[in-house]
Image (tube, rainbow, N blue to C red):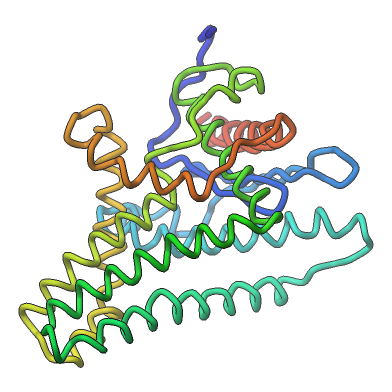
Length: 301
């Protein structure tokens, strides 16, 4: 494969996510989103990241950046999802409001919280009096992991979700090709891997492991039921911060034999949320990446 004139490497935390018929790509200073229009063309949106969340050195500190990263990707993801939905809807003379998208996201978050937080707590609580606080934590963590895998398997059968997973694969392939120094052309990008160590799905796996460790410590130090439940809320920033740093560490040292083993579940779980994209989907991901890269180059000039 040709590697002539490879592009200079971007900052480590360059990443993205899939949206409706499109892909969001993000750098430290800019973000861009591309979406396929119903007429076959590609619409693009690119903007600078000017909030203090992106410009202040404080929010880039270790562990702090993990918590902030969750918030800002939710914010960018909502904006990109709204924009991409309207790209598709305008062909049918429909305008989707931010309020409608926000309500949908909030309801989805409430459902996810009840499913992945409430139900495991109930399952663990049912066995607490028999097995103790540590057994409660183990049962809760196992239930949460099984629910996550089952949920991903179930939604992957929905056609629209499958297309979203194809765009997720296109995002990964584009970033992998760029980081390998390959030309960002469909013929080259399609050969890249569907899996990437800095994926949000992989982050969920790391969070599950970190939460099991943190909650087990709480169970040993404060075994009463109040602290067991309170720690699930108060511990979110700690778990997010530690999980984010762990993902960064493994991505930087992925060639280390020990880290390779640690990455198996991180990469393996991504097989649930990525599908092989077609050429048109790769074109969209490449367009988003190039727009974001051009914004970074202008910011650096």
